[in-house]
Image 1 (tube, rainbow, N blue to C red):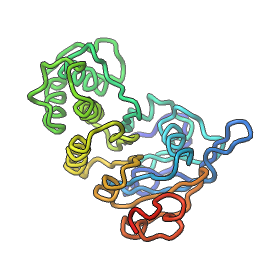
Image 2: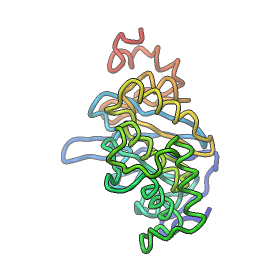
Image 3: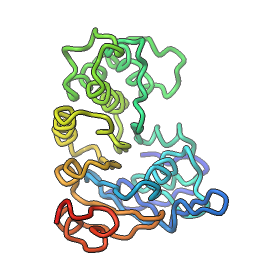
Length: 260
């Protein structure tokens, strides 16, 4: 993979999809992220958890380029992207969903997936409706992966909230990412929809690395290979689900007695 121009790229192990080194971000006198360091290997399912205000979404925004870190270094697949734009990061294979659903309700499912697939092909919306065979295939493959093939002609506004969440994941997949960041994908879903989304996340190929923020601990413990816990913007614990579940400090600040 070619490096992004002007980033001062350094080559590192391609086994790591994401490496954060001492990331810090403050807003006025409040430190939202404090020297956060994280390594996520290629193919891993990694969860970020912590109480509200722990800095999880701020850290996501820094990785995707929507916020600039005050200090520290960000690498995707061995490429330094610390000063890269959102578009440059997307070109390297970084995809994202948001806490609040980001879909075009006036389009059909198929049209939404076409847009995402076309964006991957050109990274420009010069002619997003050009339905080349490759774009059509990417869109339909994404629909199949997120179990929306039977909804292709359905207008997005007619979908349930859970199906809209599936579509968001599908749009990210249609852009052929190598790393997808899911920001509270289960927010607002019913228990059945959460179960369906959990199955969907677990079914995605290991060629794609997943990082998710999620408050639903059943989903986190069921899907994550490793979990990182944030408090006041700092990493306070990291480990496999069994280790996090029994970590006394994590129990005290976040999990309470629910999993005791």
